[in-house]
Length: 363
Image (cartoon, rainbow, N blue to C red; front, side, top):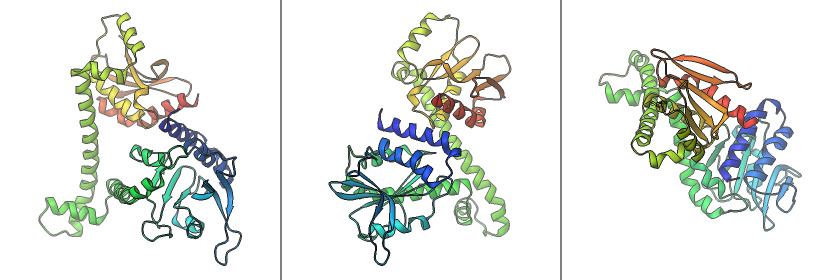
């Protein structure tokens, strides 16, 4: 299994078991140890590689322990402190990591609740752990741009120098992205004032602020939606005008052969392909895009996982004269149809589509 596939599998495990994990010890066993072993590649049962309850005397504090120390060549390289998964991470949780970081050779410290992993180093002051992480891995929303950097910390490809050299850029890019995401979700006064000043040349009063606050939020949401639709239309256009180059990404050879055997009276419309691209974009939060395929028929257009008609993610009932329906499937594979006005309305059922994918992954 490839590195990214192992990461996706662990993310699915976290989603499926989250409700049952309520203690720190359960979090370690169910989530953190699999992360150390299957993702980072270290043997959690070999004390030469992973030391649980690692102890080092720190000043006047004797016998304090950090949850895990990952070793290489007899030296501590990574320290990991765990909190229970139901508890959001806070900087106060990193107190022991701060103390241990200064008295060991570790250059990487990790604070985690099994779902979110915050990676720290000493960019600001040598041998003193930064207060802000340079990399944040959220298994509920994996940032694919961070995967290559995470891989550098694995046993197989350990490259500490490369990680440290990239940490500064990663740290500030990550913080800027999170700041932008926060502004898109709920713009603050400074953000509203900045954008309002670009389009409104009068004084920024409280009345103006109240008028523009919802407009900024609405414009931000529409901008993101426009960007997504633009990319989908580009992909759709590529699929229509260059099928030989794109077909391998959306159907397997077996599916293509099956298409030839089916009734040639089937017509796949551009609207169905647009709907397919939207379902695929939504499902890609759970699996690799290559695993999402489609099959058309006279009755409906099916979106499948792994090109398997027993793993139908959704059906597009777009063949009616005036009405369109999106069919989604529950854990018992029962289909529920939703009336939609246009393919864009598929986004309203994104969670049901993701849930359908997760149900198949759990089988």
